[in-house]
Image (cartoon, rainbow, N blue to C red; front, side):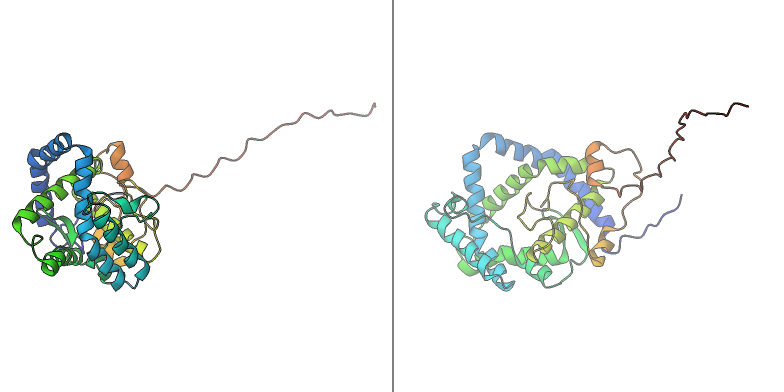
Length: 292
């Protein structure tokens, strides 16, 4: 058996990232998942939806600005329209009125990281950070700017700890519950860390492709956060720079994986084996011989 101990080209901190992933999973098992479950059971669904809608509404102006930077004025005005409708008729954003008829304005995620990707800025090295989770240098920079935009532009109460701590806590718990099924599927794979990296980079690529009118997310995002599509969706094609981060598809699994893992790590179908030649068919024909 032979192999290489070098980290993948796009994941130079693979060992540190994988260690951070393992620590985060331990914290999730012992603390985050139980707290998220308790939050889901103790807080009624309408209240949880109201909090989710409020957090999304606060971030709508940043998404609208991102659309303007991408020269998509139509979507920018739609996003600002959502913000205005939900802030007024929706009681400060706790009710997503704009999503329903007669407005029919769906929520769309957007931000500076998407702007950079839209104009061809590569993801950079892959990172798995405490609290943040999977990201890249480009996405981390965009996330920081997005989250600081409203507090710096508006000020209080958005720049106060008494606002930020509860909002980010609720947002994290809500995301943890929404992505629970995908987290379980990842845990069942032969190599959860590498699978998570692949899923994240594929989702980010698909999100940026959708801004160009291409790919499986053109009609809208299905999942939540890194799981833009449910884990197990057919993978798309990635540019060469991101393929280096993902690495080649493994030919075989080191151990038999459960059904969920087999869905996540999609294999290329083997070429069909040639069909055997058809068996000869004998037809009995009457033979007439002349009388001697």
